[in-house]
Length: 156
Image (cartoon, rainbow, N blue to C red; front, side, top):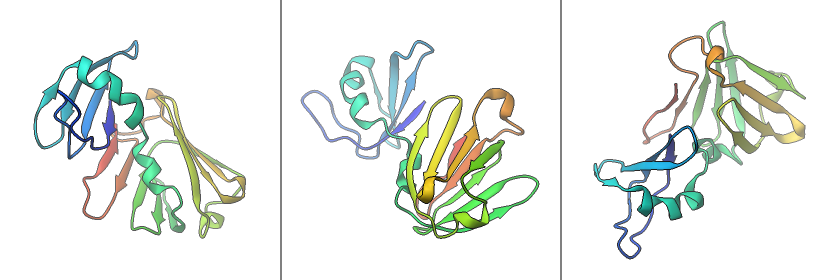
């Protein structure tokens, strides 16, 4: 399932001013898209052509943000970003090229996300890799993204 950006009206397509959620089956085919808040359902045909233009990771909103603080305890890793976002990581992770403390002040440069792993790449080649395989889940949530004035995003 992907959270997609808003889209303008285009021909018979009414647009989704608040974005939409797209579901793909196991073979990767688009099945249905649901407009957020509006509650409208759109067929696969309408969404298929547009989906490739809007399928970015929600984590990309963190790119170019500086890390302000990291907090690590036995249950999660918490990363505070300069635009006010907080990323809580509950799954197992590894950090290469830096220590957690040395992430402070570094910019997040890129994000790659697939069904098995999420990689956050920071300045100075530091890479935080989060295990997203089903067996890596220690609870109901793998991660949580908190943003001021926005809905909480949960990876489960």
